[in-house]
Image 1: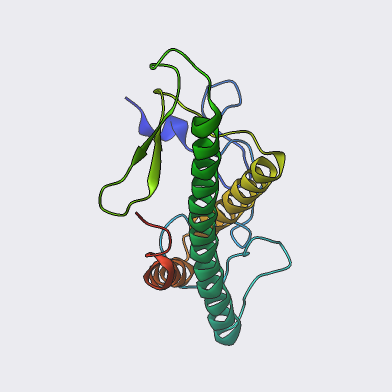
Image 2: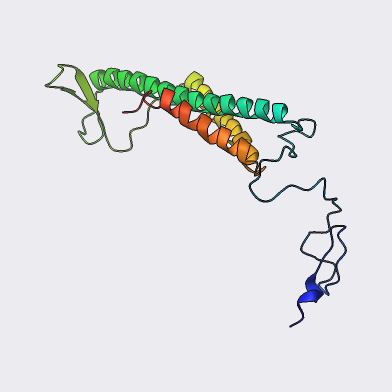
Length: 189
């Protein structure tokens, strides 16, 4: 087995007999443009945009602070989403109580029922399996918008991790931890 037949160079040429397919994917890259595919602390990476390349220690520190704050913002957004979901669930429960009071259904399996909670004296609604909260356009638009924005933030954080810059990754992980410490108890039941 000849190991030298599959070698490739950085300019995309290959000496392999694989029909022009080489390990580098025929990309014409110089060493200064390539990403480091291992964890490093060097300030050589572009951060999200080509123009945003921290090249000094101060710029790298500023980028790390920005990533730290951005990660805390992501946890605040997740907590806000949980809080809004809890509010919507309570509002949907109140709507179900109104339905249970007005339901003329004869089939007990299909109709929601209203019972008294012995501990609190509050009325509790129970219903058939698979009961879905009522559709309210404003809530569904807000839910979809919050989820889309949270997904965008999460993907941006993923792209930051993909730089393999250990300073960026540590800033992100510490920011997520601090953010969860500050907001983790919000709307967790």
